[in-house]
Image (cartoon, rainbow over all chains, first blue to last red; front, side):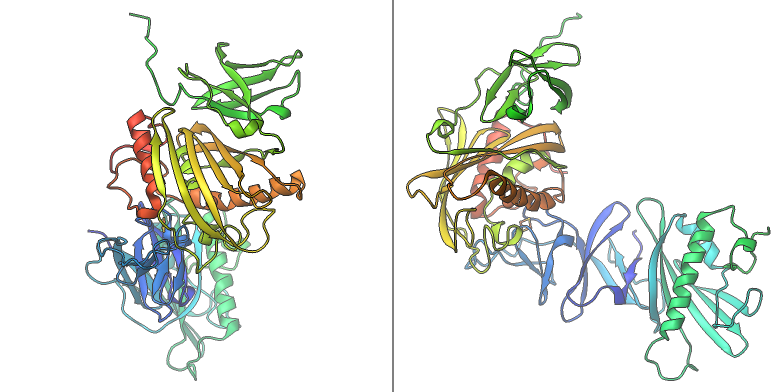
Length: 252
Length: 287
Ligand code: FES
Ligand SMILES: [Fe+2]
């Protein structure tokens, strides 16, 4: 049975947006209606095989770039521009996969069975970035990661606890003096063996008005994610050459 | 038995354009790949073109329609005729190769398609809301075993370099060989005549080809450079489609893709390929 896989930050796919995702050896188009609903289909138009991820959204339909065939959110072809007066046969459909929004992420599943393995918590998007290590290694690193909780955070200070929110999601709680911050990291296996890191943040209930994290915090965490990537992709790197990203870092 | 009888192979026993004649000067040579086989093309100081395989064996050669034509097999027919090539007053335009990572057959099929004009060549060869493809005629001409589509009409905002404003353009399509397609279209400066626009597709592999567009036009207003630029722009737009069709090979099994009435030419082309056994660049069974 195929599992649910996080393929994007929910915020990264705007209403009317279209993107491509590859899960295992299956090529998918993931798109959002202008009203906001997310869909995941086989990335292939049933007419002449064009990748639907090149298409465009009109209202609640996805249109193929090649000949403009329009498919409703139920995947049924609704309009064939070459024959404007024809009602397309209901048998013309795209192949549908499971799509969900949960925990600030877009999840897809080839079988569509069950639900994504993550609680539906409220978190804010930071960024996604590809890391040239195996997904399992990235998850292992995240389970021992530390990060700059505040602007004044220094290597060695603060306490960090780690919790698996699901098979592919790790939460890292950092406390440094009065400052506290929860990072949520989801890992997506990429077809080339690399891993995609989707990073979110929850400032916790004490952070005043909930209009999203400060730009400075996002920037700090975004920098941290790049440092983590650099560290993991360069096994010879040591904490002497870098602000630590792991609680127990490789000794010099 | 060490001797192998050369079996007939529709892909090998066919003529293909492999270069522009004018670009190959006496004493010059170039290498290319045709249907998976490396070949060497060379113009002798005396002017004759020699095409040879890596084992030195010579291939048949023709120079016609601005291009050098050859075959790695043994064609049992001569190169098809394009009578318009010799008609007085036409500008003959060698556009130059466009390399496309797609099946040579997908490249031809796309060239035979009009329904994509409003979406792929937006505001040039077509525009919404004039997207309708009205019924046209398709037949296989028995004598030459060619696929023809006639009485094709489509609205074009800028039908050709020499057209100003939108017009309903008339077209005819002709497929004289599996990887050659000829388009005849209304010729704005000369009512009653047809502009001729062709693609000669050189299969390199089943999923890789060089497309050599060639034109024979009545056009007094535009420079050769402008005509070439216009046609190249159109082909680059097509390339972004062709490199993103799945599967890469052209499906000959009718269950694999869903045509409508607008695709009659494509349906006839696929059937014709199947009947001829031309499966190089094609997928014959549903995946
Ligand atoms: S291939 Fe999608 S509309 Fe034709
Ligand atoms: Fe085109």
